[in-house]
Amino acid sequence: MYTASWRDVVRRDLFGDRPDPRDKPYRFVIRAALVVFGLFGFRFDVRGQEHVPATGGAVIASNHVSYFDFTYLGLAALPQHRLVRFMAKASVFHNRFSGPFMRAMQHIPVDRRAGAAAFDEAVKALEAGKVVGVFPEATISSSFTVKELKAGAARMAVQAGVPIIPAAVWGGHRIATKGRTPVLRRGVPVTVLLGEPIVPAEGEKTQAVLRRTRAAMEELLAEAQRSYPDAPADDADRWWLPAHLGGTAPTPEEAHELDIHDVRGTAVKPPRTSLRQRLGR
Image (cartoon, rainbow, N blue to C red; front, side):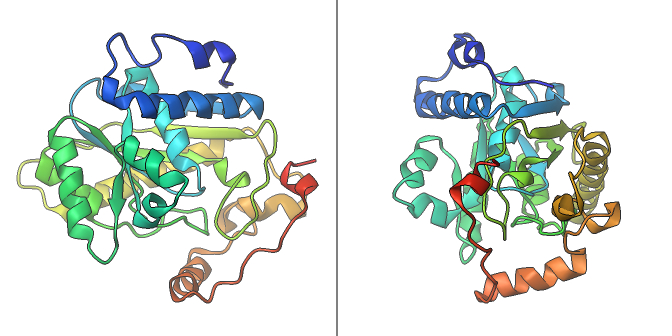
């Protein structure tokens, strides 16, 4: 397990010997994230970093269980001195606080009503040798299992001629996830696994690449869940485990219904909690 330290925050070689000056805002945000991780004592188990190419374009395709998954995945690319440009909802870019940071870090806004522009921008970034992060489930999975994947990640990998790095994140949903009030617990373990690159074969169809990607993501997620060092404290704490592992999270079918209500704007908001509860005291 790795816990961020002040030494990591101030390391001069954290981003390599000659980092791009244009990425200074991104580097600042990463150092700030490491400070937060260290203050809360998050324990990271990151495996498969070597699968991120040191140069050239690649798509990192991950499952999605928490609001902060992108920060955890970014950690996995740091050993190769790579910065991941994530595709995120356009509304995040319109936010007065997060918008300037998202644009400065060259993340890619996705407008679901006009997705072609985001797809083209992502392909250009890949062809320029950048690493693009995608959550192909398109939204957080309430069942904490891998949902049906959108084809965009596979399509852009095929079009740009770059590999897909399948990934799984687990544990961050105990801090902040859809349908629950964030709770800033100390010492939460977060597992990040990266799998072997999936290289589209010449002439391989998008759907075939997508099936291989989903199978790899499911295998990685199962391994992350098997090797996760924490267990629920009691029955009330089983909410963060999927139903097939004895948890009380919605089944995939129930989660699908929740997603429908989410889109329609009829979802029930989570109950409010006190500051003491949010701090995990």
